[in-house]
Length: 142
Image (tube, rainbow, N blue to C red; front, side):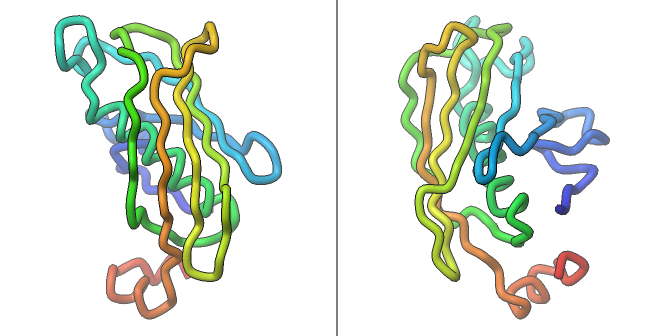
């Protein structure tokens, strides 16, 4: 499995990033937890939608990563269900819904510690070929 130390979503060396610690939840799924801070605010007291989208995108990206594949987000469709308060404890999960040779469809959810659905996403993760990895400068991930 590959993880960039400076990744905005999961990089432990990125002081401006989310620094998520994502774990495999079961055979296919992933899980992480997050509590937003004042710096993640959009409207007063509410987590910015871009942060919410980044959380969902990051867990979606880890699904193929745990499968030993190098993939990038081809599309991410986010539904914002309920406001996320700054300081609220969140559980973020993702799991594949369909796997083909080139695409992995992933569903992700953010829920509060009480189990209230806050946001969800459907992503299409494009599995990169060897040539695509080379073009992107990601040959060390082969």
